[in-house]
Length: 166
Figure (cartoon, rainbow, N blue to C red):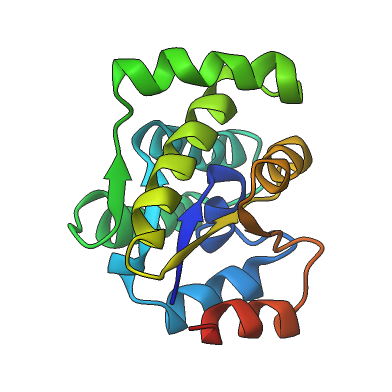
């Protein structure tokens, strides 16, 4: 079975209509929330994107309130989605990814945490798919051996395969 790690760049598409929203909505409709992971700090990034969209007038106050409420209901106040809090060791080990892959520190931490989760999942024959629209993070993740899905460039067939793979 595949589990899914949601990067903020992809997860935000669930709450604000962007390219790839339909694929993220399908992912949420078909995958159990307890088969999803997210970096705790990533939730703050999602909130930031929603707030900036409202402040720029790209979404209405009503759409903002609806997005925030859905995020609260699905991610923040639900125990099913595992919000991963990195350890000090994961943070310091992740620094090597900054230079190796030319990614920012948050993405490096996310990558290290995702790799650790992937190792744990593989002990029970499961896999982890990193879901992101961040090209550098996706490339680094593939280079480090993770499966990836980009809702902006991948298609429904790819998502179906990843969801149905066991």
